[in-house]
Length: 144
Image (tube, rainbow, N blue to C red; front, side):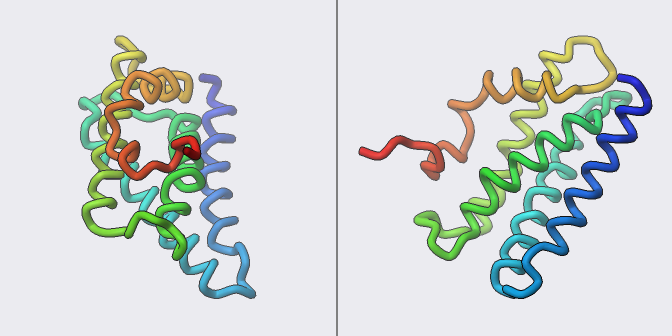
């Protein structure tokens, strides 16, 4: 990856986090839930990094891909007061385990590369999607 793009993606991660912190200041409950969801997503990614072998890293584009999708598509809906799934320590641990599974599968798609790119994340996610805990929470099931 071109170092300029690496820096741009790194900045986007920080801007995204900063934007979420500054979002909806007039509605404290929404802001608090958004920050809680962002914190859960960020912590899950940070903890999942432990599965990476020494010398292998997550590129900034891959981290941004994970952060945005985990935050917007998983943790915000699950922490919403209307969620049919009660957010608990078990659910949070399931999210963390899922991120680790995604990272492990992404490493396989990265082959011998020293960095995992967003494209590897997409392939890795597709490989393990049916095995993730979050499938049990029916975030994406069709209406029946």
